[in-house]
Length: 249
Image (cartoon, rainbow, N blue to C red):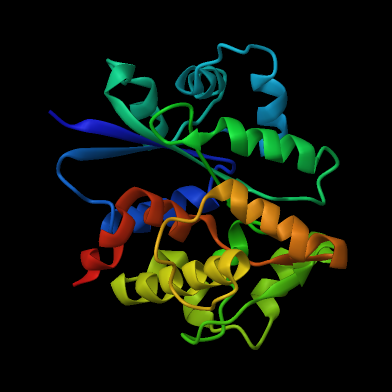
């Protein structure tokens, strides 16, 4: 019997579209059903929500949001139609760092990373630094650390769209294929490994989200920068482990 893997996104469109492509090329095992839904608010609002009840249920929180929303996506209707929530084997939450938001708080983010640290418990929080558009932030296949000023995050989306040094093949996630996914995955895993272990190579083991955040704080935040890292490759590395790249053979 198939089990469910639940993806919870901050946004209603972009992350869903990326995940649709991801499921086409990678997350397509017959024994797993990938379900996808949008929370619709940033992670700091989610922190406020879970703070109301220490016995909160992650699936229950997303169901309550979907029930009051109109024009649900077909994927979100499937989330509501789950007949037995115990069949959910893994939960991954995809949110942006978004330190420029009015309710942003690094202390709260640290608490969220501590709470959502296991996909088979409350879920695993996977953070995109600085936001989901980080997946577009790539010049070529050479591993490169990329930093962006925290004080300019309001213009990040537009900058990524117009920056001429970035390779446009990474911009349209609807056109990603297996080869592009390989390039994106390797690039962002190498960046995360450089942040954590000071080596611009693929990591030998899964990099923990709380460690990535603490290294961002130690190395970059005081200099008004953030290391650009997409959450999707990190999620895939957690899910598949060392066998990740074997899915492209």
